Length: 303
Image (cartoon, rainbow, N blue to C red; front, side):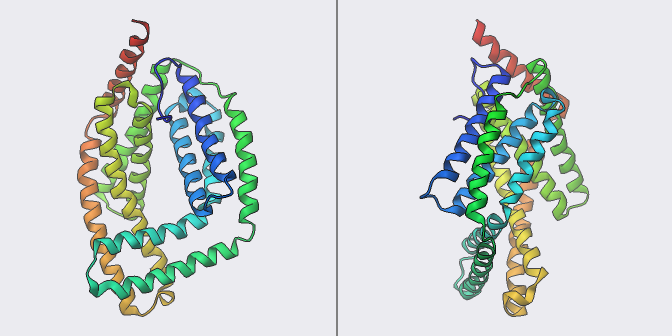
């Protein structure tokens, strides 16, 4: 896998290589004339999230450059969010239908699928300059790839990794503690974001000790499925309740919202139990442990 550090490269060269690969993949999918635009947008946004996870892992080494880099990829990703958000509603509805396959809900799901499809189509039609936007983005990413070659990561690798692993992990642990105290959609979303960045960090460092970190990565993947599915259903709830008259009868709306609440309760319960295990270690101890794994791994290169 390309989204991992390699033994023979320095931290700085690894960061530049991985960032360049992510940008190359994004450019490739944007320039493919046979590629479905919705899929292309989804893939490009995924690359941006991975890039933001990468720079977070070396934030202290990037220094003042970090904020500009992070904000640029955040804002560019948001430019593509309109169609992806509309597509996510349909995917979430399909997952909900699989969770509640009873034939009594067949017509209900069919009606909401029709409404969501119409909503997505409207977004596509209103975005009249989408092709031009994607062409412009491809050119911008070519320039961004050139800028990556000049990224400087200053400081000792172990010091950088320890500081920034701890920062991201600690923010996840704090979000989780706050979530237990006052469960709400905003805090579930915050916990989701922090656990996702933590997942990227573990994925980047997997080669340091694959046996241990692959297991943690799998648990984080599962956690992010729970929290991601819950977030998508939260967005669906907001869309429906924001303009309920656009989604059929009040009885149909309430029936779907009831199914959503039931599914969200299950996802949140499973997610919280898993998150408690993942973030059980103290941030300082966790960061120190992974730093030592890195040191021992790099020692293998010279022994």
